[in-house]
Image (cartoon, rainbow, N blue to C red):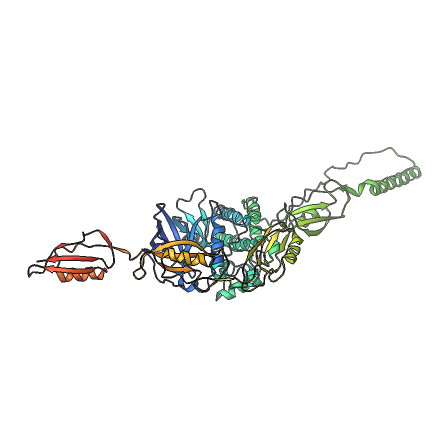
Length: 599
């Protein structure tokens, strides 16, 4: 595999995308503004850099790009195409004129509260579409949030879904940490696989930065910052920005919880809780439920003169009255007075329910359980139920939601298909079996799954199980240098199929002959596998310059530098060119012959 380095401005990728200018550079890839000459539109082409191309997993990259391309959402940058150019993988995306969220923060430091919430809501809306499709972003940060010009409507665009994963190949292994240290979820620092809750954590850190103007953790290097995510709780944004409403501050802290199960389960759950936050800030409040109003005795007692009576009779009457009142009160208390109706705790959260019940004279026992319909941290049910007869001061059992129940996909590599189906039946997975050849696993053994082992999924999630058909029985023949027809015949003779055919100019390979093939010669393959070809279009056409009036030696030197073969005829001694055989402005392949006449 050959690779190209440096600025590729001006290159024509895949005979279609003309790279106009370099608009962004990063450790993983360079991004160019380009013209799609086939559809006459502006696009962005992201080219994996040569330094990252070594060990590149093309299959994972292609799968990831196709999955992302199926997403259609106004807050996600669309993916149109992908391929290989001179050995470098690339992806073609929607071009978004504007700026990044990082640029905006560099100018303003922090955003208004309403503006931060709206921006975060659009980000979560886009993420929800990705999470619903089974995608996790893994690197939410201001640099990956694009803001369209104008700032109206759906102005937020999320970019870079999953491409870092395809480069590093860490979806199926414990590969290097991809996420940015300032926004990385604690579980990723520990080497665990990314989940939708990981994106929720990074988004909460980003919202903290929008509200306060800084990220919660810093340090001398990225490793120190990453450790703080594991060892410390994210502080309330109110400590840096007291004007942040209490409910919003509590949501940021909840979404940035160190334990993934304590966060909103995905972007959709986070968005619903964000939309329910009251953005009004009440100075001096602490977020506690206010104490209920108590009735106070206000009736004034006035003595009135009474007629005199026998004191013994009065004492007897008083004793009898007291006894009667005591018996009646005891009966009332035992039968009715110590009971009341159970209050409703269903509109509370795990943080407020205990204080709320205590103010009404009850104890609370919290129990956690999974719920597919109630957001994490909110009350699912209570026992006794609302309105039931309950003794004052009794204990109410409250079930708090853990969100939808999640199951880790088991490690199935090396197991039989039957054992794999049995393991996946534990959470009612919808199993699809795909057969493939493998150099690592024997026939009938599972090679991998999608989603991969360790990823947490909901009950009933579709899982593809790949089963080995044994070692690939074929080797790809070497067809470089053959004509396209001969190459196709050679591949078909081996039971293989010609895949994508692209064309490229070449100064060394004759027109119509194969320049490159993928997979390479001698690679293992199975019957019916595709082999992609790059076919030469011959030398690239060169525009003929106008050399009439130039000195014949200078004209010859200029034409030869462009690749032309120059013949000259001089009928006088001044040496000035007065005619040329190929018209100026016309295009001809390198090596074409051109005559110059001078006098």
